[in-house]
Image (cartoon, rainbow, N blue to C red; front, side):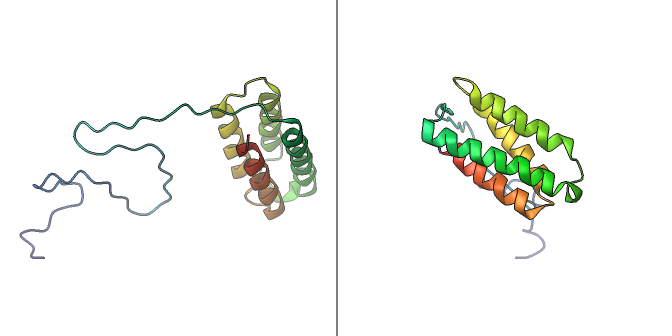
Length: 134
């Protein structure tokens, strides 16, 4: 491509390409619409109260995460915040109709806090899968 036809990445092409470009980093894209008059519509996202068997599994995993948080507390830069998120998650899941955003935020924050300790991070990932099955 000659210097005359090369454009900076932020400049749209004259052909009207409305694509998406990403340079580096991590990306998680859910509903996305690109281009003139584009629109992305999502269905309702719901988290249902778990059945008895699912709830038993989630309770086991929450207790496991609590135990691992205690065992690996020296590896965690913040010892209290993960416990707060776990308590928030437990309270939300105990509601008749848990709010998906609250559940998702608690799990995401819990995963971030658990990152420095692999056993805790693995247990949080398993908890996230179990909650996602609701």
